[in-house]
Amino acid sequence: MSSADRYAVFGHPIAHSKSPIIHTLFAEQTGERLTYTAQDVPPETFETEVRAFFAGGGKGLNCTVPLKELAWKIADHRSQRAELSRAVNTLALRPDGTIYGDNTDGIGLVRDLTVNLGLTLKGLRILLLGAGGASRGVIKPLLEHGPAHLVIANRTPEKAFQLADEFGDLGLIKGCGFSDLGTESFDLILNATAASLAGEVPALPKNILQTGGYCYDLAYGSEPTPFVLWGRDAGAAVSVDGLGMLVEQAAEAFQIWRGIRPETRPVIDALKSREHPC
Image (cartoon, rainbow, N blue to C red; front, top):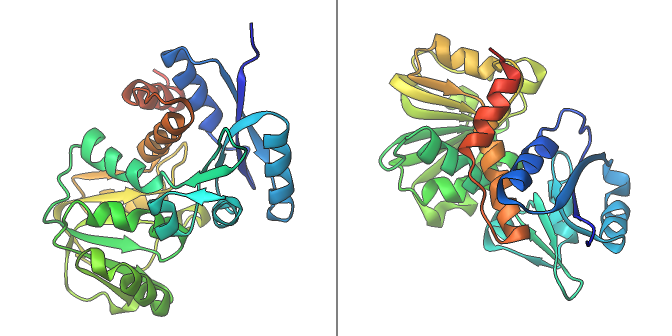
């Protein structure tokens, strides 16, 4: 019997990653023979480690913070969504030895919002907090669902202006600073800043969340993030973290590698039960 194909996630740090659990569950569900490990790789050695992994028989990689921009540079071929985001979270070795790069974050977010949470994005007023790599990866998929408009707010307004200009052809979008957010309220607020990881929440005006609106933190943790708690205090009908997005983007990567898309709901439920056992 041939040995199992090898996959991994590279990040720095990486010990907290749930990706090995997720892909192990995917493999069990689909009957695919593979191994998936987590490897701490600092940016300085990233390219060397990637090439060594593939040279040693590895088939595919996920790349997380702070390696997504470096993964974009190392890819020989990229998907359109990877080109737009200028970040890659999925690398696949092609039969000809070249490396293909894709970004599955945006589709993972949208699937979690629309399929798992049952939200209809069309016509919504959406506020996206942060103008970094995490935001870049989700703007196009969000605009493709036809929101009324998308506002990007960032501590440094110039970065938000730049993103709005880059994606302006895809829909109604504008950028501003946190301090420029006025009296407008939003139906959906997405946190793509690193504030939650530091135990903080961006400074937001009172009543910025529409009554019965939704809050979503792209970060995730074993406990509710500060932004999730903020959303609950603000009266959100739904305020959740990015665990579902993590599983959905992983399923997209699995399909790129194996040609089959696993069912995500059982895996999301399994992860939640591990965090909060009965």
